[in-house]
Image 1 (spheres, one colour):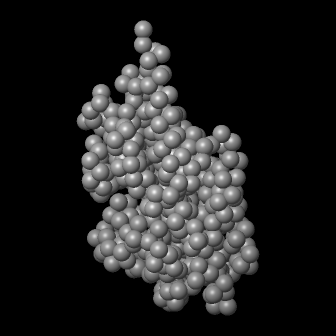
Image 2: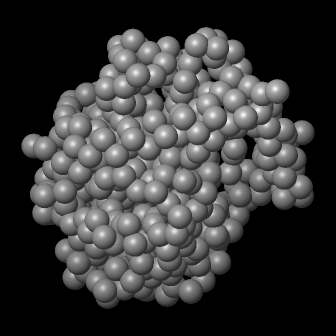
Image 3: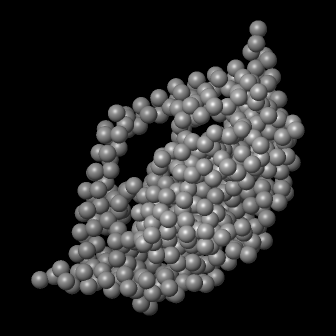
Length: 225
Length: 225
């Protein structure tokens, strides 16, 4: 009884995700789905990225949280456009929620939309949001064994960001073990190791973002008659 | 369409949870449901608790993980009985899973069963496991705003353990803000602040455990004819 209904929910989400994908493609807009456990540092990464790249790109954020608009407030402080979604208990964003939220953004004058998912290393993996790429963040205090213990999220992402590098001296965290574990579940995973707090290691992430924006614009131009 | 089926799943879980509750009461056995985000330190707390209290209590652990038996291995190293559940992707333990697992434990010769849930600060809150108390752990690197951002878990717990106190000097974490935020969603929450790594602050937690075991035995004795 449970399985077919869950399948229906996923299928309905997939249809909404396809619509979003088309919308983002028509606008030549790079959409990234940013996922992690609570408190891994997704908002901190966005704060720094939005500030550092504001001269280069026009960016906006869709914020997903069970409750509060704390994160949207932090994003708004950077000057970027932001929409807060409160899921009222739901453990992930759905394409329907994101579709309603992006209507409030000036999509024609944007290069990147970051979708910050609910903090959860399990459920968001199942729900497509029309994104171009999935970026999963793992913070060092969570432990180097997490990619192997929570494989679906890492298996379905294109990028892993190891965050809170500034805490490395105070932790029993083996960077090589984390990278190796992540590549065991996804050999193509692109990995960046950063401290969103100090700014260490952000340049390769920015370089990747720039290339991804270029690729998306090219895709749009090639599609036009 | 979705709601009634989810209600059915929850009702079926509730029935299994009632059976577990009866089983634990008949055995005079304290059952604790330990929940948190991935990597907050649930297993580390258990490792230290099992070692420190092994002369006093007979304890066992049910380990819940999406994949791997890493945590069961760590628990087994302390000498305690342990059963690993792999949920194969499910984001929480259910009473049915726990019911099957505890059959493999020597319930008649135990004082405490710790049920270590899947690392997830959202979904486990909805699923009763026949437990006497719910213990939710928040680790300092996750941030002091998490009780307000993820209220259901904290609202439905009796105990909050703030862990990784040893990292406090390296973080922007306000202990008072975290405690205040948690008490806003649950004014009766009992709060312990510890470092499972160094052992700091563990004594009040042990004193609480001892009282809870006594209460459970008394409950059993009072129920007997």
